[in-house]
Image (cartoon, rainbow, N blue to C red; front, side, top):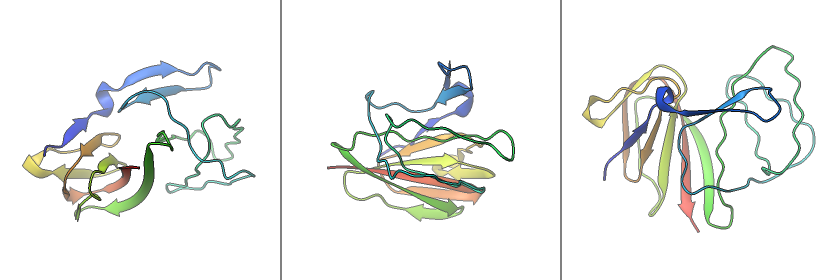
Length: 146
């Protein structure tokens, strides 16, 4: 199977309704979806702090260290299970049967099979073994059909 690369430079850009920022949509497989709300107050700190919450949950944020960049994965909980792991290149990863891997390049210049270099913000969508050379940090999301 082949890897599809979604370039950050080609992302669809949309302004937030509240005017507080913009969204750069990299990959969309049918529209809709929600997340899991764990409730309470959460402090996220670099590098790569994360929080899982329902898409309908009201979120208020304080940015004590200035602007930040969010990366969101939205999926239908009734159709998929989703996990995320951080990797440093090089690595090989085989998805669970039927799963799709989405590898988000955080930094560096990770290299896919065929010599395709990912820039920070690019996503490699892979339904098969993901082979990464070069150097860099990647967040790899696995979407497994239920």
